[in-house]
Image 1 (cartoon, one colour):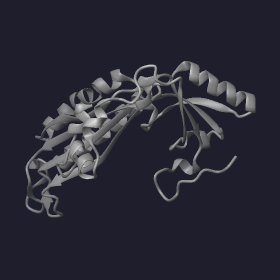
Image 2 (image 1 turned 180 degrees about the vertical axis):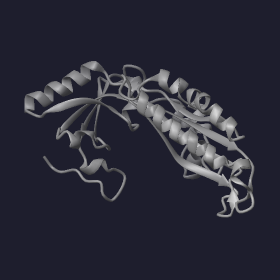
Image 3 (image 1 turned 120 degrees about the horizontal axis):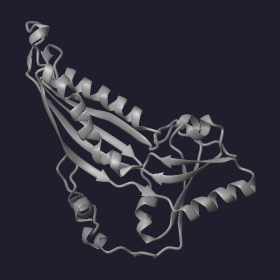
Length: 250
């Protein structure tokens, strides 16, 4: 989409510029090679990238849906001060406020997950100023990523989160707000394909379970062209995209 081509990396380069830089033609991406009903079905095979199948000793996972992903940048503003000469009771420590937000996000996701939706929330990136051992942090930026099979959860998660910590932040004499960085919609797998995958596993004598995919996959981009499905197999300790990734042959 035009929005995707306009997305920028940390260096400010757009996706379109990056494609052109390596010799590609970004304008060629605007016309799909396959339209609606262009495929009879698309079935993607993949390791689970998580620990569920291995922990339950199941060889097959039939994927029900692929989560949507929403990312927001939360900024907490306080006041930078000398770490040694500023008494605790008058500090405006932005990192303390950020810690309250991170803890609240974890609790909120834990409470929402499995009832009945899959929900996870992660703060995997922090930027702090002055970022010095002898300075009270005056400003913290944290990137919050939420993943869920529910649009309703994604639509309201950060808003609910920030409303819930507002009193704590006020007591700490801090201000905070957020802007959205990106949003991807959840994608349901096709029931007919799920049923066929489970029937095939049953016929071959493989125990299976149905589960959502917490990671993004190619099937998301094939969904507009026709029915989709995914089949997971377990991976050692749920590890992926690392040297420890391992799949034991059946």
